[in-house]
Amino acid sequence: MMNNIHASFQSGGGFQIGSFCVIEPNVIVGQNVKIGNYVLLKEGTRIGDNCFIDSYARSSGDNIIGNNVTIRFGSTIARRVILRDNVFIAPNVMTEYSRADGSKAIETLIKEDVFIGTAAVIGSGVTIERGIVVGSQSYVSNDLTIENGIYVGVPANLKKRIGDK
Image 1 (cartoon, rainbow, N blue to C red):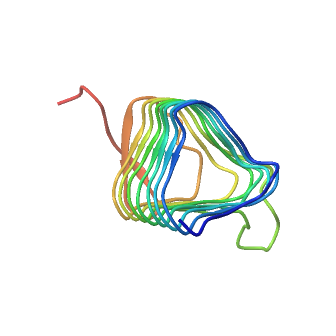
Image 2 (image 1 turned 90 degrees about the vertical axis):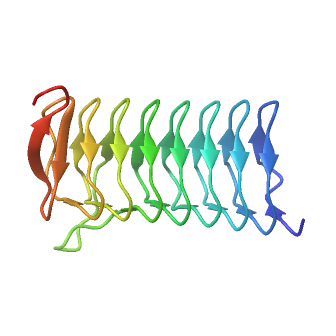
């Protein structure tokens, strides 16, 4: 397996892990969590129950990942990012910690039932409201405030609400 897992690591029942993973100190994962190959979980990462962390995904530490969250291949969850329950992060999504002026974010919050499309970038310190879809290759630079909205583009703007024609 060739994993490097710190002695302080804690996991719930049903935990599965691939090969060549690095888990730093004070990482906690819940029940029925599956981690792919070449995953990096830095210090202070917290993962809830029933989550899937795909191969080559990374957390920068000091973040909280809720229950029933999927983080797909090659995505990065930056420091101080909170993913609430039922969030889907498509492949190669990037979340940012630093702002353009070099300052650090207080917190980036992605609320329940959000879908982030492939290769989207989530800027530092933003909030994405419940039920939002962020389109592939979009850049989120400001809060997305319309629940159940579909946001696309650079920067991401509301295209329509889910259910509207």
